[in-house]
Length: 429
Ligand code: NDP
Ligand code: HSE
Image 1 (cartoon, rainbow, N blue to C red):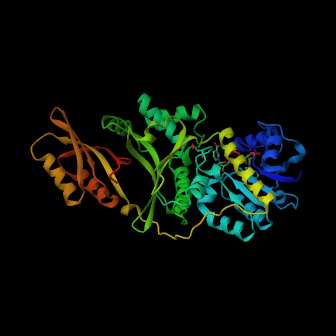
Image 2: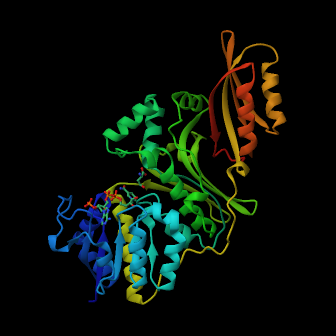
Image 3: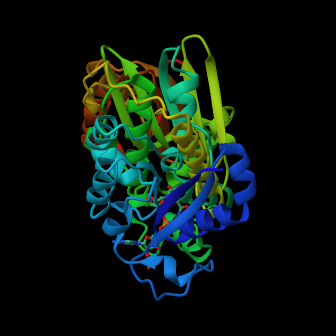
């Protein structure tokens, strides 16, 4: 039986589980592929460090560039993360004909086009199922299973850390800071949680999803991004009263000859399938012309689940090598422009603390009318001389909604804007 040699770059949370599975399942993998996989080397930053898995010290190296350009290496698995030196190393690997499996959403979202081009030019494969939503088979379904359909919209919870935090805020009434602290104590959030809580991670994943779903090039820079640091207990309570829940959503839409791609917190109805996605789980809801509505759900992170997606890619790439072929490419023929956030059609929930006296509701409604925003629902709760006015709109350009809120903030009868949040998933977008 032929042997394919594998270079493993990174042996941390994901890499150590990839190594463990490559070793533990070697017989089954060989039977499924029709070739043995042999680890040719493991590149890490600190070869002397104690690891979660026992790696033959002779395999360890700090020189990933040397490892991937070795003539005996066939497949490179990259689970280091970050942009450089990884980009240079992967480009060199593909230039020397190696196929690449990566879990690196940051790199794929920033410069996926260069990597894909290198793969094409050198007859190599580039697979990255683990880069979005961990263990959930999602990129291959978008790239292959739905290749004959027209995807209109992708709506997903693709960051487990923020979903855990928002879920805790919803179920325990905790504020953001306490929920973050709890997530860190339980290992769901990194000591530096910036990439997750500021929405960078979800935005990178949204870029990858939009590119595959709509056959066009989308980078992280094209994605409108808002994190969850501004989500307050008042927002969560307001959502609850409306029968909604707050989620950090990656939203990719194809409309008006372009694509709208964004990652921000939004209220969704508790009856929506994504509302039931609890704790650190991920789920992605896809709406396609012929397939209708599809939902993908599962573990979006963690060493073992993510390693499952990496190994699935390794098997696919190895099978292609044995067959002397490449897997299907990501197509970008549609070349759609990215629409600015101001042109995205969104719906807003706004809770206003107002004076409870004649003309206030009329003045507030008049402000919405002047910005050409249609009101869908109004609820008022008396609080002595004051009242809380909750207004939910129909879909309108985001810029108009945002200008409307800015004006509401300046009105004499509005004491405070208690909560502003976009609303998704109600079906009249
Ligand atoms: P870790 O930080 O746990 O591991 C990173 C590994 O890369 C370590 O083994 C480290 O070496 C090694 N490394 C760092 N810099 C270099 C370098 N310059 N040269 C060689 N090796 C280097 O990261 P994760 O395993 O959590 O994540 C890896 C990738 O997988 C990232 O792209 C991440 O976004 C992605 N991912 C992670 C998920 C998760 O749940 N953790 C889920 C989905 C995707 P050393 O051990 O010596 O420090
Ligand atoms: N930090 C990410 C999350 C890990 O919380 O979902 C997987 O990409």
